[in-house]
Image 1 (cartoon, one colour):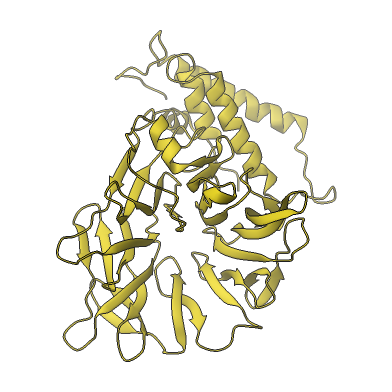
Image 2 (cartoon, rainbow, N blue to C red; image 1 turned 30 degrees about the vertical axis):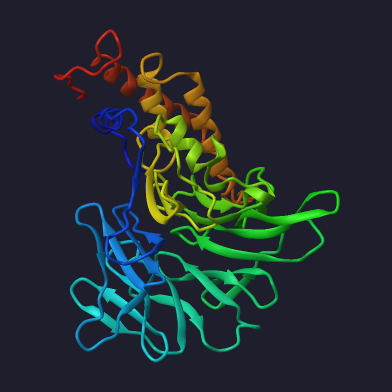
Length: 415
């Protein structure tokens, strides 16, 4: 059913903030736990909660933007919580291991505390959006079945790697093999999947020069097959935003990577440290090349990971960075972003911003399966002209409600 775009709706879409300051936040190393190293293992969809573990003390932590760090506890009748391997996208469920005679997998919530998972799940690794479905690695041989790495928000799609050294995407028990990048050693691994389950990221062996090949970051969709991500000659793509406009990972600097990275269509592969430095944040003393996975919020603006702080300790960090071409900061580049650019042209936005938006949009469109000629529907000219004429009319009404400098007045009326 076609939805009518009213003048009120159109005017509402044009109201937005223009960018936000970048932020870099070390998560902290609590006193009294010796020479602990901190490893971050996940972030909630809204970017406000982070989980991970301290080693060698073997303590799991939950960080929130409200309360800061706290250790997860097993309760009086349960052993110490050893690791936090992941947090559900809604931020309410944490999974990991307890310390017992042998490791015991668990599921934790604030209200229910610890719930033990079946012992055959040797390594819980990811959950559906609300944490009601947990996937992991069993204690049995994984030669044939492989290892699960991530799950879609609805719990219907699982991705991972097989015992045959090939990444897979499994939906409803139907497994799709992802293949690999051009080279001579057949090897790939799926490490994460988008919220809707259609977009897979990970790593694959691939040629980087005469007689040389490395692990390379990649993405896969049904429409594109496997595609090398960026131009780094080493790397692993470890997470993807909900709208697929941002991908994070890491690369080995000795093999052509540059540590923790975020990729977007408009900006390409950029190290997190360089993005923060360009945003005016002093990163002196921080080493972001420690080889740990990085994780993204749903909108791709928040990225978390592990680095070495200026004191040489492994410490978790959280970075907030705008995405070029995403003017309304909702994690994609669409028609609303174009309207915002149009209203801000020559005041807050310029032609290079439009180029960023166009690049992002072209990438997102490239991911969709192309319709066949038999199924394509071409609107009649009269219908198309009516839509265009209507939009131009509405834009004209909204234009009359702006000041001469293009800024919206407080008492505008778009009726």
